[in-house]
Length: 530
Image (tube, one colour):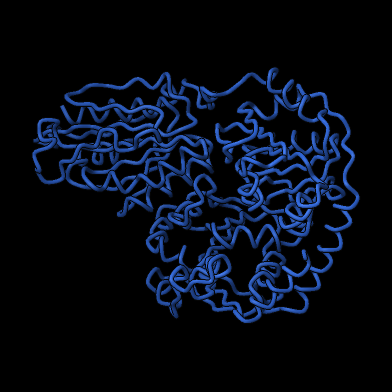
C-alpha cells in the first residue's frame, strides 16, 4: 500500500496549506518521492544534503507565509534536520518533517539505516506521528507556530503499485493556514492592562524593538512608539530602524548607549517588543540582582532572560488595549547618543578600510527595498551599528538560537523574485553552508542573489571577547574556488565601490577588511563610552 498511502499523505499535506516541498531523495523514501514527482499542485525543490535543505525549507516558509514540508530518507538523514527544526521552533515557523523509516520491527536491531526516529526532535516539534501500514495523521490541533514530524514506516516492496499522475485541487486547501496562539499566550486585554501598569510605574523608560512578525505588526508598533515618545533602540530586523517618523526618538550610536545609560541610572526600566534582542545589554539584564525592571511583549513564548515579566500575546491587539502615557525621555541620554552618533560617522570617514566602515558603505551601495539577510555573530551587530539611516531595506536573519549554520540556505529560501537579494555573512558562516548554492537550481532563473562574505580570516568576534587564538579559527582561505565550483560570478573587494556596476544575477563578493584598521576602529569606538 506504499503508493496509495503516499498519495493520501500528500493530499492531506496539501489540505493543510502546504505548497512547497523540499525533497532529499533516497531508497527508503522512494514511494514518497515518485508519488510527489507525479503530483500537480506542489512546488517541488530537489536537494541532496539534508542540513542545508532543512534551512532552505525554513526560508521558503518565511517568504511565503505557508508551512513547507521536507521529505527525507531514513537514518542519519533525518537527524541532519535537527538544527533547522530547532530554529523553526524558536522563531515560531511551521515546518513539516516527513521522514521515511524502516518498519518498526527493525528498531534496535542494528539493521542498516534503522534507528529509532521517534522522539528525535524532542520538545522542538508541536506534534509527532509514528505511522505504519497506512495509518494517517490528524493535524487539527497543530498550532502552526512550531514544526511537526511525520515518521512514515515503509516496508518492502517499496514501489508496490503503478504510479499515476494526480492533481491536487483547490478543494483541498479549505483548512486555514493562519497561526494559532501559543498555549502559553495570554489574552490581549489582560496583556494590555499589564503593559499599561508597567508604563505608568515610576522610572525612566527605554524601549528595544526586535524582530516583528509582519508589516501590519510593525505599523502598529510604530504608532505605539510615536504616542509613547520614549528613547527606542530599533534593530534592523524590526523593519522600523529606517522609519522617518521615529528618528527623533531612535538611538543611533549603537547598543553601547544603553549600557552607558543603565550604568548612570538614566534608564531604570526596559520594554522589549518583538523577538529576543540581538543587543548585548539584553544578556547583561539577566543579572538577578539588577534593579532594572524589564517587560517583554512578544508573540513568542521566549523572554530571552531568566527574570522580568513576559507577555506572550498578540502584539498588535495588546498595544491597542494599552492606555499609553507620554514618556519623558532623558535628555542626557539623547544628547549622548547624538554626540556618539556624530563620532561614529567621523570614524567611518577616518577608517575607510575598517570592517564596520565596509558594512556602512555596503549599506549605501545596496539598492533600497532590497532583501538584506544578515548573518549571526558580527554581521548582524555591525549592520545594526553601521548601516546608513534613512535607507529602507527588508532585513532578515535567523535569530531563534543565533546559530551560524544554514544561513545561506535560509537566505536562498527567503530571496524574493523582482527585487535584489543580498546576504552579508561571515567567512566561517559561509564555510558552514558551502552546499547552499545548490538551492539556486530550484529558484527562479531571474532571481538576483549576492553573497557578500566578510572574510576577516576567522572568528574575530571571539578575538574581541576572549583574546585567545584558539577561539578564532584563524585561516588564510578565500572563496574564489567556491564561487567557481557553483559557476557563480566572483569579485574581491578591499573597499566598497561607489556603485554596483557589472554585478551578475548570482554573485559572490568577498569583502576583505584591513584587520589593523578594524582594531583601531573598535578601540576608538570604545573610547567614546569611557
